[in-house]
Image 1 (cartoon, rainbow, N blue to C red):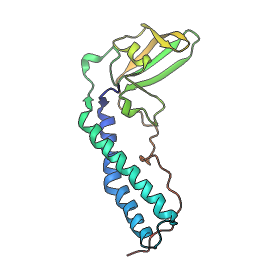
Image 2 (cartoon, rainbow, N blue to C red):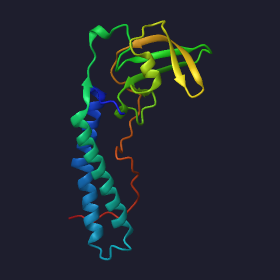
Image 3 (cartoon, rainbow, N blue to C red):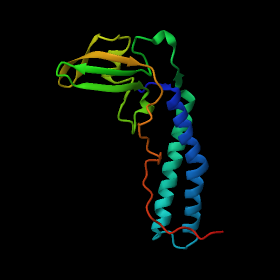
Image 4 (cartoon, rainbow, N blue to C red):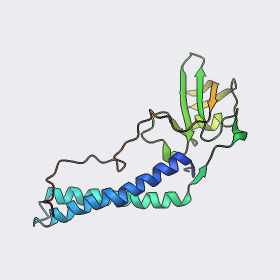
Length: 182
């Protein structure tokens, strides 16, 4: 089952995506659909078919975001969390081979397109909760138990170098003729 937890940054990002899709992207695609429909025969009109499909995908994502934003619980940092791993923490761990990993524990809605984020529902995150620096954690994997040592715990906002896909609908726009102005 998908957790309903989300960081403040994640919540704001979902709201921004919803706002972008509803106020900017959807009207733009709706205009393209109307223009393509005005050209006549829709059965062989690739612009019409493509943009109509894109509009359905946008509407599906808008419905999902509206429902999801109603049920997620925003978890903010609390000073009592210092020194232990909780939701929203940046954690650095190291295994016996010296491999070091750094990631942030966030809600499942926040991990897509963000390579240094792991879901609170993941085995690694579940094993790390309430651990302190120098604690060892046993993480179940398909290949057996892996042992990691906690090196660092920080509570910081999003790291600025984390790329986020600007086309939040996940679709790549194809080149198509622009509707005439006016």
